[in-house]
Length: 361
Image (cartoon, rainbow, N blue to C red; front, side, top):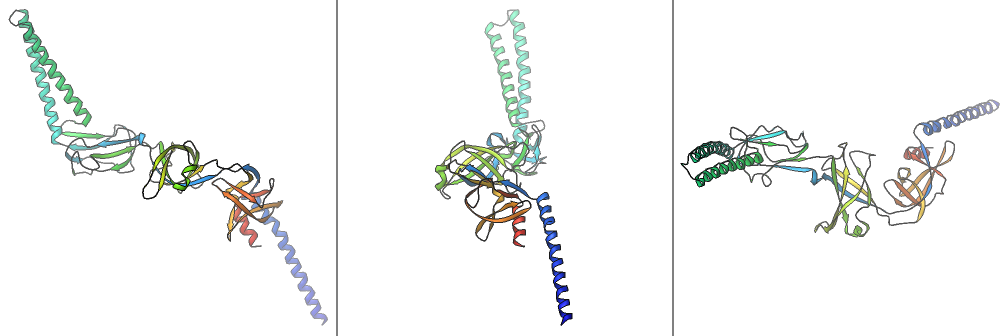
C-alpha cells in the first residue's frame, strides 16, 4: 500500500512538471506571433458612409484606340503581329499586294508624264508669244493645263499616301500609334477586300496607358450613384492592389435584358497592370450615412459559424475572441454596431491565424 502511494505521488509530480513546462512554453509562442506576424490596431469611431460594390470589366479607353482599315482589295503578306503584341508608331504591320495599288502607281506615272508635256507646251507657248506668234489666251490656256496636271498629280499622291500605296503594286499597313494589338481580322496569304473583316477593319491598336472600367449598377441602386463619386477598384489578378478613381460617366439607359445601368471609371495605367477583359470589383463610396460607429480594418473581421468576430488584445501577448455585430463590411473598413469600444485594440494582421490558434487551446 505504501509503495502504491509513493508511485501515485511520483506520477503527480511528473504531471505537474510537464504542466509547468507547457505553461512556460506558451508565452514564447505568443511572443513569436506578436513580434513577427501579428499587428493590432486601435478601434476608432468614424462617420459611417454607405459603400456599394459593383462588378465590372477593364476595357480600352476609346480615345486611345486606333483602327487600321483595309485600303484596297488584294493578297496579304508580311503580317508578323498577333493580338497582344506591342507595336510602335509607324511600324509596318502587313503588306497588301493589290491591282488597285498598281493602278494608282500607273496613274502617278501618267501624271508625271502629263506634267512634263504640259511644261514643254507652256514653255513653247511663252517663247512663241514673245515672237508674236501666239496670243495671250493661248499662253494662259497652256499655263492652265500645266496647273491642272500638277493638281492631278498631287491628288493621286495624297490618295496613295492615305492608303499606304508603295511601289510595285503594294499597300503598306502601318501602326498609327504606339500600343498593343487588341484585334486582328487579316491573315497571311489570304485575299481581302475593303469590306472584309469588321467593316474593312484589319487591325486595332490600343494605347493602354489609360483604361476604362465599365461597371453594372442594378436598378435598385441607381439612386445611390452619381457622377464624380470616389471609387476604389480591385482585381483578381493583383490581390491587395487598389486602384483609385471616380465615376466620370453615368450611362442614362438600362440594358433591356439585365436591367442594369453602366457607369465608367477612367484609371491611370502607367504601370500596365490593368488589361482589357480583366474582371474588376468596383467599390463606390455613396456617402449615404452619417452615424458615428466603431470602425476597424476589414481584414480584422473573421466570419465563423454565421457570426462575425474580431480578435481583441486583452494584454501584452494575450488575445481573446470577441463576437461583434457589423453594420457594414466594406472594402477597407468595417463598421461595428456593438461588441467593441473605442480605444480597444484588435488584431488587424493575420487575425484568422490568431483566431484559429485561440480555438485550438
